[in-house]
Picture 1 (cartoon, helix red, strand yellow):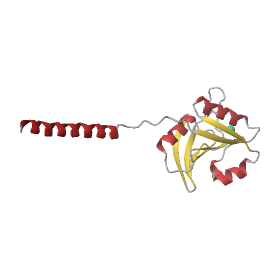
Picture 2 (tube, protein in one colour):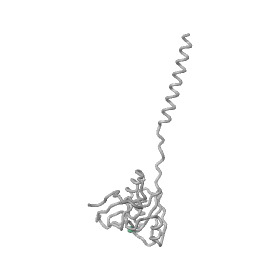
Picture 3 (cartoon, protein in one colour):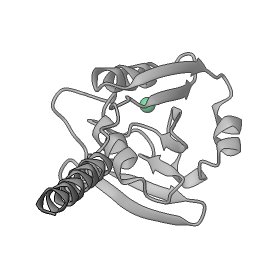
Picture 4 (cartoon, protein in one colour):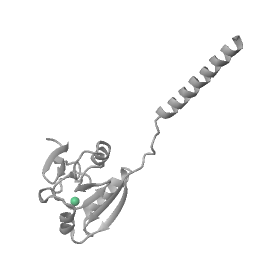
Length: 160
Ligand SMILES: [Cu+2]
């Protein structure tokens, strides 16, 4: 009788240990490999500040493919970049549009937070934004998160 009881307890123990092992395996977080996002940049073949911005992205760990595009405005139109937010280059990353001299740190934040927007834009070409450096001068500028019918301030840089 005693031996039988012992063997039942042993069986229960084995089952519990097995269950625990199975549970801990399931809850063990699977760490995805941090993959660097690939950015495709469309720019006019003669745009120097666009190339400086590409260098800024590469320095910050992005993989970049550059496409020379002589007709930037029709391209911006087909990608849905609103007229009021346009700058020099236009980029695509992971389903988002990046218009103009947006800092790499803001793109990284975009890809982590993944807001429901079309993309980010720095309209025009503010002095002191990445790729538009002129000494130490940094004019205040905003990074806008945009959709077809909405604009929100995503980040502010320089003195405001
Ligand atoms: Cu530019």
